[in-house]
Image: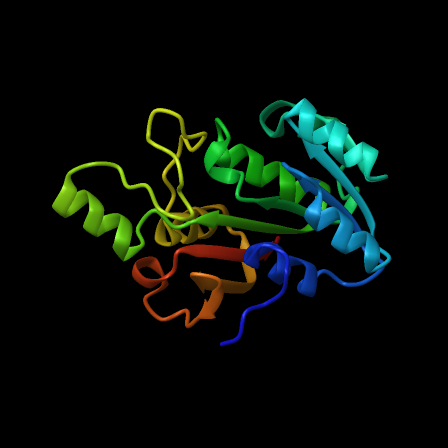
Length: 198
């Protein structure tokens, strides 16, 4: 399949699947790349970001972003405040991913979650043959400096969704920067994106 766009691949998938004109909260919005793309699609796009430097950069670009912590500050939003609550490459960095997921589905009519798959075959091979935590393109830093505190896999995430009665409306899997088949995604996909609802 062809490359998706100049956005990071998971963000391109998200942007393409958020309905134009929707209200969106991007939790852990980073430098605001997704927010800017959604704003260009006439979405009411707002962000929450922990890093003050990223918040300042977003605000300087005219994006509506506040400083906040996904683990602590989502509770301040009323139920169903947004059409979409998005968490891209942030789930594995939160203290309680299960609670953050519940909050996303409380404040958004739908939630979009993307994360690196720690069961990808290259990660498994690095552990098997090298005996060390891998450093890859999607996991580019050593174990002692990574923000990733929960090593989630596609199958782990699916099990959590089933346990909580969360509906998967759509799922996309990436191998490198390209979409790949959902077949054996836990082994083959480097990255996963899920569109969820209750």
